[in-house]
Length: 112
Image 1 (cartoon, rainbow, N blue to C red):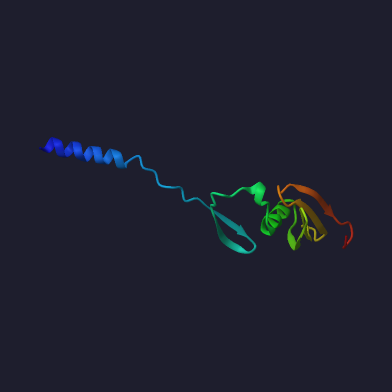
Image 2: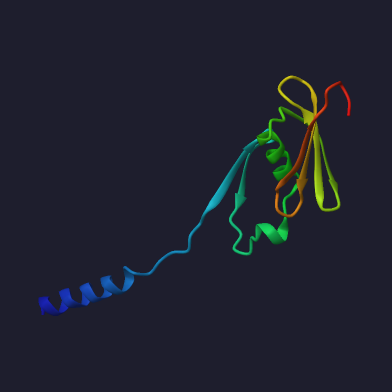
């Protein structure tokens, strides 16, 4: 009798063990706007969706822009204006679909 109970418990435990729970991955984004959560989207396709203004701002900061003044979408490109670490005006042009940096301009004077 005890043997039958142990076999039943072992069988039920072995059928429950391999079941997997769905992944609950999330991305945490930390930038000048604070901390926020970007939940994982199974339909997320970076190339089809393209980048948004926050992504363009982040890419420009990676290119050396210390202070972002303006993010402007012009057709298939983002133009991000700001200043570098020496307070010189800077302009970064970014492809809106792929996020590739197309051009980085640093003005010699105070304006472009």
